[in-house]
Image 1 (tube, one colour):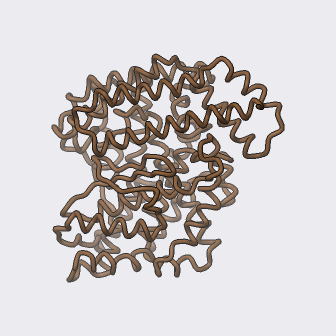
Image 2: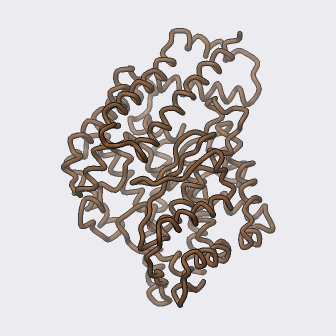
Image 3: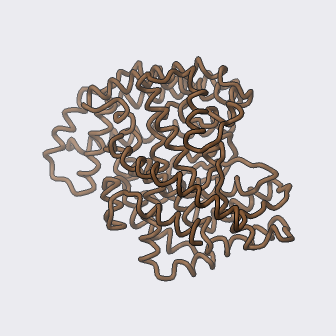
Length: 495
C-alpha cells in the first residue's frame, strides 16, 4: 500500500471521529439534560484526544513526505495539501492541551447558558478566563510552529491561509463606508417608512412547519437531516446527517424564519459536498468564509430579495391567516428591508451586521494578545457598540453574552461572517449573470437552477481550491468589497 493510501485510511478514521463529536455537540445543545455535562465533556475530550493522537503517530510524517513524490491527480494533490495542514496544526500542540481545552470549552458552553439565562457575565467570567488562557497557549504554540502571529494561527483553523492583514484591508474599507451609508439609509426609511411588523401570536408549530416547507423548496434533503431548537441557531452533524437548529419567538415569526433559511444555506453546502471525497480533508468545505457565504447568500441575497418575497409572502400570509395592511407585499417588503441600530448580531440587518463583526474581531484580537482582560469584556463591548453602532446594550444578555463562540473556544471565527457576506454578494451577482431566468425562477419558487449553480461552483469543489481561487473562477474576482457595497446601495437606497 502506498504512503498516500495509508494517509487516506488514517484521515478516514479522523473524519469518523469528528462526525461522532459533531453529533455529540448537537445533542449537547439540543437534547442533553444539564446533568450530562460532565460526562459529555469527558466523551468529547476523549474523542478529540483520539483524533489528535492519530496525527501524532511516528509514521505519519514519513508518509506525508513519501506521498509528496508519488504520482497523484489534482484532487489527491489537494487532499495531500490539506492533510499536511491538519498535521501541522495537530503536531504544533501537545495532546494534553487539546484535551484540556476540549474539557474547558464543554464546561464553559454550559456555564454560558446559565449566565445568559441569569443575565450576569460574572457567572461566566472564571470559565471563560480558562478557555481564553488555554486558547492563548495553543495559539502561541501554533504561531511558533507556523512562523505567523498568534491570531493568524487561530484564523487558519477556520479560514486556511487567511491573515489579519488581509482582513484589516477589507474591514477598513467597510468601516469607512458603512457609517455614512447607514445614516443615508436610516434617513430614507424615516421619510418613506420602515414597514410594520404583523401582529402575533405566531404559533411555534406553524413557524416550524413553514420553515421546513421553505427548506424543502430550497432542496434540503430531510432523509439526511433534521431541524431542531437550540439557544443559538447552528448547523452541525455530518454531510450525511445534517443537524440544523433555530429558535422561536411567538411574537415575531421573521426571526425564526430567517434563522432557519440562514442555516439551510449552511446545510445545503454540507449535503452537496463531493460524495467521492466524503471522509477526506479535500472533501470538506473550503473554510468558514465560504461556508458563511452560502448561509448569507440564501438568507440575505436570496430570501430578502423582492423576487423571493413575491413568492414567499402569500405562503406566509396563508400559514398565519394574516389579514390587513401589515400583511401586504409593500409593507412586508419594507419590514424585511428594515435597517436599525440593534444590539443582537444574529438579528441584525445586512447594513449593520458587518459592524457587529468588526467589534468582535477587535475584541477577540485584544483578548488573545492580553490587551483586554476577560473581566473587562462587558465594558469594552459596550464602548465598542456605542462607537460603531451608536447604541449601548442595557444588560449583558443583550451585550457580551449573546454569542456562544468564545465560550466554545472559537476565537478567530468571527471575521469569516463578514468575509462570507462579501463572497455571497460576488457569487449571487455571478449567478444572476449566468442564469438568465433566475429572477423569474425565484418568483415561481423554483430554486434548483440557483442551487445547481452553487453546487457546481462551490459545494462540489470541496477544498480543491483556495477561497480566492474558487471565487475568482466563479466570479472573475478575488474577494473584495465592491459587489457587497453595490448590492447594499441597490437594495437600500435605490430600491
